[in-house]
Image 1 (cartoon, rainbow, N blue to C red):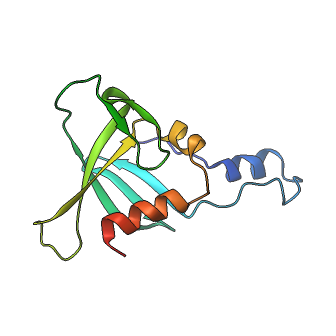
Image 2: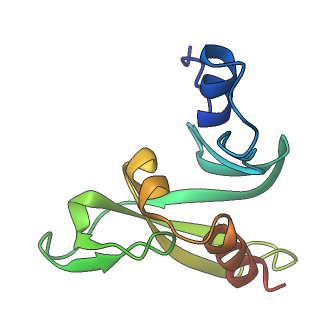
Image 3: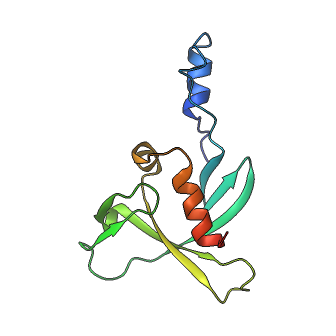
Length: 126
């Protein structure tokens, strides 16, 4: 059973209902959800992408770059994932690296949802 998580917007609105609209965080259309199969990317509740984790191999001190927040760190801070290219029937995959700490990754991202949209365009080929 997973714990319920709350967005920054939900927390601000529940604890400080009189907050000026300019100070309330905008709703987040994209959300990552961990499942036994991997990491699901959701937009407004519908699944866009399933990222399957890949077992770590090679030198653990090798620096890897997170595709969302552009943080460079050793492999134990990042996880490699693969996503099936739509329409390839399991013959083609795109590989991405993401931070293991989704909260920290989200805090380091700049440009709102632009990094997530860039990731989607790379994987889905849009």
